[in-house]
Amino acid sequence: MISLKGEKITLRSVKRSDLEFFKNWRNSAEIWNNNTQFILLNMEHQNSWFKTLNDPEAKKKMFAIINKTKTPIGICGLIQIDSENKNAKVAIIIGRTDLHSHGIGTESLDLLLTYGFERLKIHRIEAEVLEFNKKSKNFFQKSGFKLDATFRDYMFRNGKYWKLFSLSKLSHD
Picture: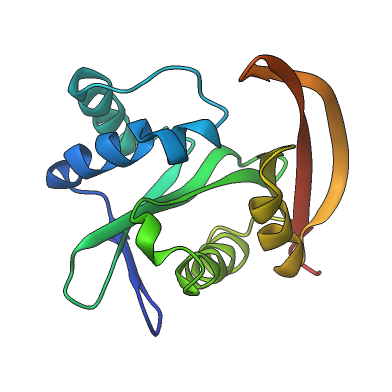
């Protein structure tokens, strides 16, 4: 089991007991609206996803974000890991929305970047952000991510098309 410790939070390997939390957070209107996935999750989806985490060929490393009382408050990880080209995408959700803007996302991202760049020897980590999610775009830019591309009319949501921004950070940035 992997554990990455910060000052406010710890990232630890995902446990089956976390799945209900993750499903509820991801399906909440506030979180779902800012996510690029189209479907709402059920426990069948969660259990199938959980089985893939321990696959030696898995191209993702996922972590539960837990507070000092060991309560899950979010999920994050590196996904679509491309070992050959040393690339990955970052995924991060602070499921407890009352804890947004308290530095938990920043600390989680810092721990993930250190893990990705130093332990996995990844060269480039990418984040995808929908146009209307200005808070997330600013969050990644404050952490040193640079805008690489803008995909026009990427997603239809709430009656209109939105752009998708691709931002990345390199290991030497």
